[in-house]
Image (cartoon, rainbow, N blue to C red; front, side, top):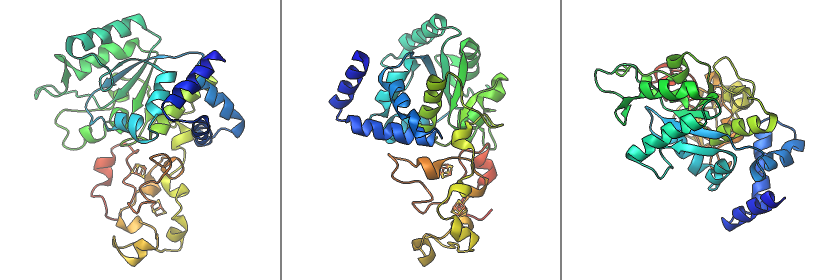
Length: 313
Ligand code: SF4
Ligand code: SF4
């Protein structure tokens, strides 16, 4: 009780009421596909965590958009919640340490929590070094991955680059970039997206803390609760697709009427993700709702497979 009281006081100190927090927990529970009876338990995971798994968060070849998506845009206070349920031992974007001190912290955390920490990876790993691609502190991405990842209890790939290689691996891929699972020959939990919705990362971690196991994954390692259906199958414009009512030009009357975006390049029929349900920025909107076709960012090789964008498949 004391723990919970202190948690709510901390949230209130940040201008977040208990009501706002419960609204978030209700939304998260529903997005995870759990019944509403789980809402108090989900709240408890944050307010009185029984355990805070240590996390080492590695950055390789990426733009840091996945971290930005997670800690900044969804709820202004989501970073606080993530810090409540996880013990972040190393994260280059948010840690105070730099240079040699940061490298020492990485080694210290990996040894101290060997076999117990969750390794979260953002970014693809370069496998060709002639051009000097991908080094941190004098070590290649591959050397860092081979040093740290085998010591982890499990690996979560945050974003399509670490999951599948994605943009760093797009043709002609001079650095030989690949996803973490492929490079290391291991199974990873893949929170796909460019960037992924922060709720998909948080929901996966909460699922683990709540039920003591990872959620069911599809054959690409993506949690089924988030990536089990296509955008097309959840899209509010679907009736227009069935009626063959299409936008053929941006800015047209058909666009203003919210017609289907298939003919201006929507990849929703081939893309598995929960954007129509989870939405972005505190549930405000999502690309198709805002009139932009889905570009298929949660699918492997989406850049090579789906470009040129804005043209019918
Ligand atoms: S806008 Fe895209 S996802 Fe929505 S119905 Fe049309 S093709 Fe499908
Ligand atoms: S609508 Fe499509 S491109 Fe946009 S975030 Fe969702 S899956 Fe990615």
